[in-house]
Image (tube, rainbow, N blue to C red):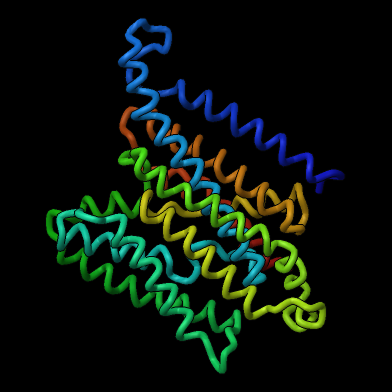
Length: 315
């Protein structure tokens, strides 16, 4: 942990700004930014690359912040934004739009699917006006498995649409336009709400009973954090597909530098998640054949997940 962890935030912000500039100049168009064809360069930067880079920035920051809050809320280091079935619900909604509507309104259906799955988990886990974190976690796993079965059935029956469903499920920004960026701007707005409750999240890390004794309304805080985190995840899934591991690995890496204080950990995770996804997407789109960015994050995240499992086993 750093002696002055708050100094990490301006460093990450500078790295993020430099990353935006560099990745804007990287691509496989074959054009040089020094060329005199200003119309072509303007179209390339402002209509192709910048929407994609800013979209990756917002989605990466959103997934990392939601993962940070989920890990704090569940007090589980292996929790991530998709742990209560949000991604599976979104994938099911998108698959339904692809198969039955030819892809029409796919982001809307993905958002509805992600939100509906979370609401279902919440209703199942609520007992006598209270929501136990353990019940919420197990309910999320059960609902996610059920939705996975439905998704598998739709994919089996999808015929020629199977390729499109698979590509969307791996996540990517190849269809990112300014309209999608406008929708993604809801993510930082929602993240501000998460930050407002960062102190309560610190207190709840001591245990629910201790938090109540210290004056934290734990039930209200859990509901707000769950709803806002799910909203952020649903927005991210609806515009970029299912991009895994960002919400899992980034909070862990940042916790090494900042410690457990969510007042610093949360914004640091957002900035680092944005940086990671910008570079992951740049790598994915500059290969000879573009691949979904979810494959890149999986290559990075899967070994880290195994490391976490082995570390927990040793404890």
